[in-house]
Image 1: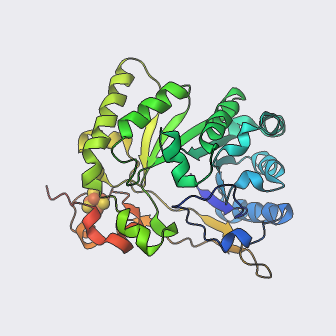
Image 2 (image 1 turned 120 degrees about the vertical axis):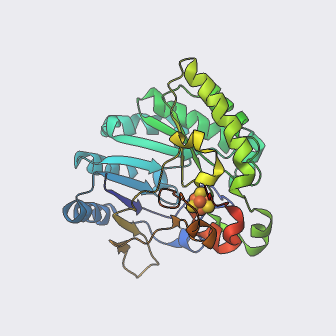
Image 3 (image 1 turned 180 degrees about the vertical axis):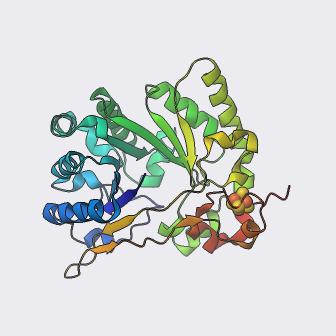
Length: 311
Ligand code: SF4
């Protein structure tokens, strides 16, 4: 399925330590509704996209967020919203969204950093956000909107994957998917990077412990969908690879705000930000199917974060 990506603004109500958006970007103006409509109709015309990923910043803070989703879904697009989920705590906002937009065509993906409130809020630096995001996602589900809980594996949460899965399994109806993802380090300072390296062979036992619990629940009848994206295949034994997304295509188009006075940055030739970018990978026998991880991880830590398969 062909997909375009639009960051509609860079304003945000959280301050995530791993956020790829810089402080400067938060001052860039939002893209206006008219400009968004023009971008989307261009993507449809040129690239015949069927899916749109709407991001930010925090996209729900855009003044025309609901109107834009209404426009995109009316054009027949499936829309994935990447949101921290806090604004969906407001039931009136969720009810307005559900009344304006075809709810079967939207999905909201929200990152929960940990099953422990304090650890989640250590990452986004906003007190109370854990409870608000969880309530917000439940509000969406009550309106029939598909929800995906994203979990980016970092140095702090890497040993707790089974506990995280169990927490989400207890907290959300099984229609909520769980998506595990590696981390993009571009929001970190040089000092922070030294302490934050996650090596994929190191997290392998914790990944497999979580998958074993998940598989046991599937065998008991659970219908929950759990899967990994941007996760190297050296993060788990091949037995578990059915839960991994393999190497896939890139976004067809990309658009984002740029500084005041400039044009919107819109690109139909998007450079991959994830892949298998090191010598260890080039010698690995599964490199052709492996999705790898973020380029920033290889830039900072090189091949020490992965381990090649040789047979
Ligand atoms: S290609 Fe690279 S990231 Fe993928 S399994 Fe092999 S060593 Fe790991």
